[in-house]
Amino acid sequence: MKLNAYIDGGSRGNPGPSAAAFVLTDEDDNVLIEQGYFLGERTNNEAEYMALIELLRWLGKHKDFHKTKGDSVHVRCDSLLLVNQVTGTWKVKEPRMKELHAQVTELKKKQPFKLFIRHVTRDKNTLSDRLVNEVLDKAAV
Image 1 (cartoon, rainbow, N blue to C red):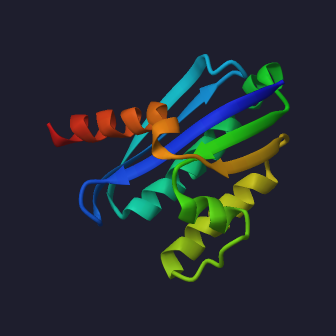
Image 2: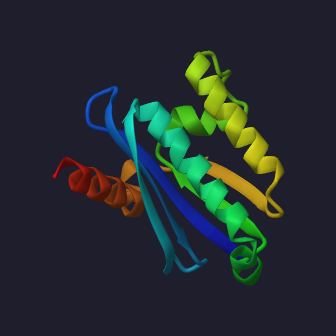
């Protein structure tokens, strides 16, 4: 069995107020967990990385959850930069991205499951995109 994770990050301005979110679903895409985070002032790319970091942190804290739901996590993300840097296809050159990439690498090492990440188009990532915008809307009030 596997879990699907949809992640997204965004900012209103670049940099600007930003948020990250993930949505965990079962194999049939039934929503199991939704988490959104206000990040303060960040760039879009930083927010995308933070979405993956928050997902990995959450999974690390809830190891029993993934044991009952699956032995692999299949991450879907609409950021080509994040996917290509995390998979090693692209080099990480920007210092802030290097720091976030290092955090992802360390968190991945601590996970007891197989992690797969792939790029999807924005229209296939609506669950987490909606959550990012909800978090940003609430922060603007």
